[in-house]
Image (tube, rainbow, N blue to C red):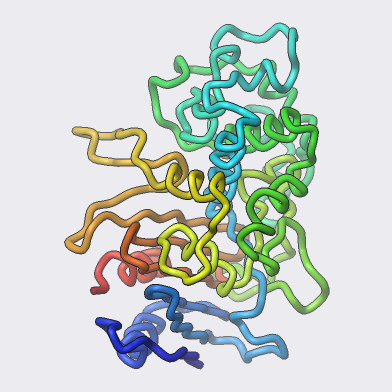
Length: 354
């Protein structure tokens, strides 16, 4: 099913052409539920499909687990708090979390910027996470590791690299960032995210917990077996966001400036600009560019910023081209596997579409 809204006369690509492009792309992805959504200067085209029978709630109105694609929300929250003067990027996390608590010198040097940009020196997950997670790896690996345990693991950590010297993707670090911002502001993460990001952007169908029965998409293993809803335990900031594809487009449109109702709040506008600015390079010949929270790639049509995520049975992709009004959001209800085409298909819509 494809839903098309009327396009302005100046649109370089017609909604009908975009609808055909999405329908063709959808054929490359095998999933019980699939949504591919594109926004061009606020004009939206949404394609829904999948191998499962549609339920009573349209697929584009279901909330999907974003997994690691939650991190741009954490990044925008930090950027807005900095713009408001409530924290600084160079604030040290340990000083905000546990003032005076004795920690390893490397931990003492870890800043909020290090945590968000995966340059803290922390591992992907705490070392003691795995013993409790492995026995339930395919059902609930995170739920048994609560917030206080994440914080304790951070305070007793021994980073392998000096903060700011190496890039290593870390759910642990971004989770610590969430707990640090909550401590610094005296506000629970969920409330803070809603106050500073979700409500100002009008993201009424975005949350960090499962919603009412029948409103959340159900994930599936590769064999089609349903999996339970994700419980992120103490790793909320790193992967707990759930959102409808339409809300994902609203979130992305705010970054592109393509929507008519782009934010007018100065601190939020500043934050949206800040998270699109390149801040580091890594890899061979420094080929990989990152902003505070997005991966950045060059394309023939200009740079694209994007982030993908996966949970036990769902996948999500978010991306946009700064300054062009183009945004792509995609969701699927099948666990990622080696031959999976979902991310490549969604990325192609972003990077290869005129």
